[in-house]
Image (tube, rainbow, N blue to C red; front, side, top):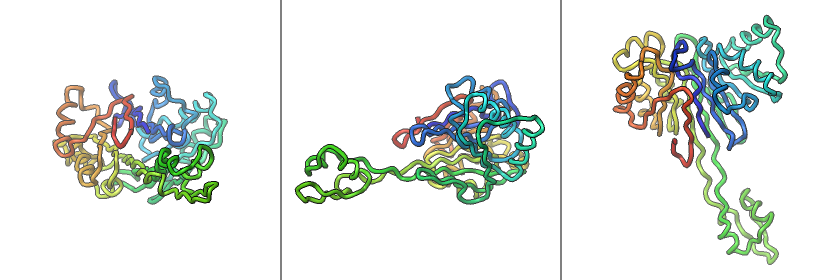
Length: 310
């Protein structure tokens, strides 16, 4: 799994940061990419990468503020021009479908692929054989959701040498064992899968929070997460101002990660008021509360390998 940050700014684009967009690359897991939020000029940000819009199968929108959705019509249209013909599903708050459909109707936009909408409510919003996605409403000035992506446990590794020692020949029997099925050898011996397959590996948990002030809901959605992506529009000197605007500070984001028992925290959605020279102390302030905190930037890529963020 990889996280590719296409936009890490707040409110409006700046020279250093575009508006919100995060591509979650699940190519190794399910050969798909999921886009979280799609601020203005997201498709332009993609032009500077090797990302293929046609590989995006799902888009999750946290809320309907412009810096999180104004790139959607252009992205969806360009996906058609770039050969996308596979269905795409958009998850988001009430009103999102109406806005997209009216925009396309008035602009006479035609898509070459089926577009589906899921109106998000709290609870499970998506589930397949590999992943479960939960949503919970946060505390912003408009309805806004955070998403928790849980990868289901992965099958344990087949202990091939141990299976061979027990007399299992090369071929389909090994595959049956890996899938958890006991097998019978030609000599009548029964080989149990549990004896030659390592325990299942725990999947990763990724929490992506939309705009929100510090709240218990954010902690709940983040419990035990491997990675939390949390907004940090303000710093520790402006806590009251942050709350008034429905936003969080870097320190409050770190507090959420600490209380949730998370492994890593990625600070996102930074105000343009923070200049490059302000960022080292901004990060250090958060790390005082939660040491495993990192500061995102546009086009930054993080990889999840062997339970470690790289």
